[in-house]
Amino acid sequence: MKTKPVLAAITMLAVAGALAACTAGGGGNGDGGGSDASNCTNKIKNPDAPVVTLWAWYPNAETVVDNFNEANDDVQVCWTNAGAGGDAYDKFQTAISAGSGAPDVMMVEADRIASFQAQDALVDLRDLGYEDVKDNFSDGAWKDVSVGDGIYGAPIDGGPMGMIYRTDVFDKYGITPPTTWTEFEATAQQVKDAGGPVFASFAANQPAEVTALMYQNGAEPFTYDPADEGEIGINLNSDEVKEVLDYWDGLVEKGLVGTEDQFTPEYIAAVINGDYATYLSAAWAPGYLQGAGVGEGADAGVWATAPMPQWDPNNPIAINWGGSAFSVSSQAKDPELAAKVAFGVYADQASLDEGWQQQIIFPLNVDVLDSPEFQDYEVPFFNGQQANKEVYVPAANAYKGMTYTPLGQYYYSALTKQIAAINDGSATGSEAADALQADVVAYAEEQGFTVTQ
Image (cartoon, rainbow, N blue to C red; front, side):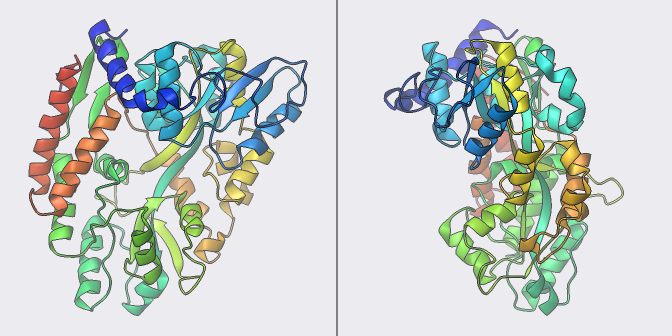
């Protein structure tokens, strides 16, 4: 168990981050739903069955909940959309701090699980049905929802990474998808010298993506197990991390990549306009890009995808950006029944098929990943390319997982600051790594952790 000073510090930080939500109706009634099963967005099919409350923001959440309720007479799900991402987390944090008002089951992104687990807000699922479903997912998928030896989420979707690129740009300049980072830089230089666009974006507002790139080079930024009595390993200025940051620092300095923030209207306009030759992103990117208007006009039919460039092509490392799970709240009225819902919602064939066919999720269930229908699917955004078979399924199967910690959100903020310093020329990659290490170590020690390397 974590020592009380550390747990108290984490709790106080989380409370401070959620104070604004205290008046937003994040408790058991009204906005957010909480543990009140009378405010369901969906219709309960069997009113005589016990009800499990669920917060989730998947676009097709109501459909998958209806699918579950149709198939299960012994339990029904009462679903509420309490907001996406941070909005839902703020309401959940308010309920944790109040000791009531949380749903039985909560949709949680993998990188948020450790911070909620540190507050004893989530239930370990290892003895609540995990053994029955563990073969449905890869070891990497399970590691992402684990904290120490505990399992704190049922995996649903992920973001195996690839290199999305514009075939029109590649054809114009006579280039092929680079397979190594050395080739990536050389190809980017070739395109620039010929008057072409920058090759990618090194965006300060995407610390999760940059962290994945660190893992690809063999870095292990954190080690953490709550059984270690408040110890945490922090290694953010290792040779592997410095090599990654120095590499991107060099691309920025040479003008081979842009430094614009991603997920902004300006960035999307630049993508549509052909200002970027590639977009290093995850399997969920086609859905996001199409939703933002990419691939519908002059840039329709020009997109393809390839495996991520590697540091060592003889020892490739698959990486992941994003992914969500269903976690059981420690306020669940019946944890065993809630676990059945966590493992069962978005696990039936109809829901999974709709999820990937409509580009809502990239499922991690191996039955889908191994299916000919999924592997052979000719993705419209990629002009009929069998992107799942060629890029994303191999990456998902090879992914080994990451180690997340209760410091995750502070670390992301600190990394964002250092990427910005690289981009404005005020720090080299190595200097940024050293500053990042000092910053996160100091913060961890302030919170009562004993830091190891």
